[in-house]
Each structure stands twice: as structure tokens, then as C-alpha cells.
Amino acid sequence: MTGENRIFLDVRQSASGVSWEHRLTERQDMTALAIAQGFGVPDIVARVLAGRGVTAEQTERFLDPTIRDLLPDPVSLTDMGKAAARIAEAIVTGERVAIFGDYDVDGAASSALLKRFLTHFSVPAEIYIPDRIFEGYGPNPEAMRELVSRGATLIVTVDCGTNSAVSIDAAKAAGADVVVLDHHQLGGPLPAAEAVVNPNREDDLSGQG
Image 1 (tube, rainbow, N blue to C red):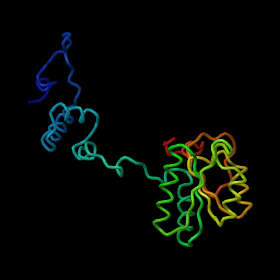
Image 2: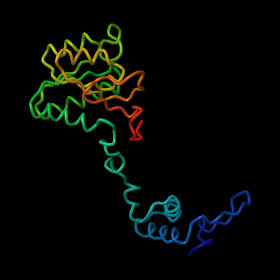
Image 3: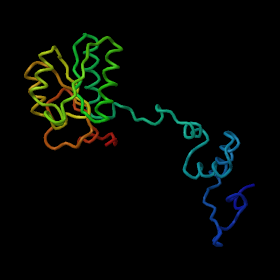
Image 4: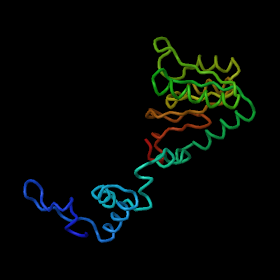
């Protein structure tokens, strides 16, 4: 069956008596048929997919997507290449890495994930979460200098750091490089870090902000 007779399982009108309009082109009708036969989905589902522009070749990926299919290329984020290169250098040379996180869920989770990644490569890494009451949000100069005094040559801030130019300058003056991984809005000039990965940077064109 093709054309009008296939509209909504042969029902030509809504409950209020309004006639359904056939919106698929002949090519989309053929695509819908291929999707229904090839993937065993109901005719109405196949027609919706075809009407949304999904081809028969794209159907499996659309119905059963993977993270690889859904996530954009990380390098599309500004400075991601620089950040990855600096962290890779720390892994290769066995540097001591400090992870400066935030005390909320995304900060704590990011800190744990990054430490697990670095530990897998036998990189000595420590997590520093500031005291919410006494230190407040984000890196502070005293904490950054303390991490350097413990041997950190690379400090990676997660879920913070975009608006911490003074603290990052303190870390650099003490002898450490800093990589910022953050998503918060920028409230001033970018800090002078090795890399500032933040989809909300004004010059970031990844579309992930």
C-alpha cells in the first residue's frame, strides 16, 4: 500500500473529523518501507523516521546509538589539543599532577575520573578540593602554591579555573603549568594557563556551550 491509504494505519481522519495530510514524498515513502522491512519496526515508526530525514542506512545508529555516535569530536573544543598534549607530556615524563576540583557533583566526579585515568598510567596524582567555608569556590593562590610545594609540576583544574587568573599566575610563578577544564561563564580576561578548555569561551565554536 502506498500514498493516502497508508496514512496512520488507514485512518484518514482525526477524531474531530480533520483529514490527515500525506506529508511524505515518494522517496520518503520508499525509505519508510525499507526501514519497516529491514528493521522490523511498525509502519508508523518507519514513516516518522523517514519524515524526519532518517535514511535506511542511518536507522540502526538512530535507534541504537552509542556514545561514539552522539559525542562530538573533543578536539572541536578550543584548546583541547593543547590540554591533551600537556597532560600526555606529564604522563610520558612521569610528572606529579595535582587536580584542583570543585566541591559539587560535577567537580568531584571530574576529579575522580581524571585521577583514575592518570593512575592507570602510573602518574602520581593528588586531588585537592577546597574547603567550602574557608576557601570558597575555585583555586586560590595559597592552595596553588601549596600544591607546587608538594611537587606538582602540572595542575589541572576541573569545574573551575576560568575566572582564577590571579591564582593561576601564582601557580606559574611557583613553577607549575596549569590546564583549565571548565564550563562556567567567563567574567573577565582568560587566565594565562597552558590551555583553557571551556565551551563557553567567546572564541569557542564547538557549539557545546
